[in-house]
Length: 124
Image (cartoon, rainbow, N blue to C red; front, top):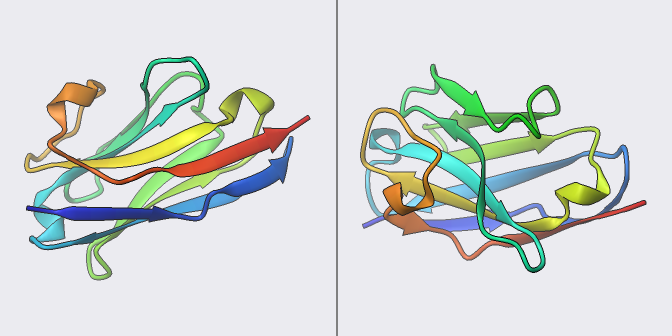
């Protein structure tokens, strides 16, 4: 079993940046594909980005491509989501997720382990 804890959320003005962290514990972190999802008010959970267990393969939702960067440091058991040029429509609770497979995918039901979420609010 893997425990995931997100941090780094907060309130930021449009155009600003935040870096989210997802600290993992319990199992070998490097054996897990990681992903970030988000859920805005009244919306379904949506895919943001995913990263293979080596960090070599990355995939982004079109809505964040070019603005967000997913990464991981397996020595620190931590995944990151660097968010730049933030927009009000990025406002959501952001969740990290993990699955014991090489490559991640975009479907929430694929992921067995989830963090509790961290709130990101972007003001206009």
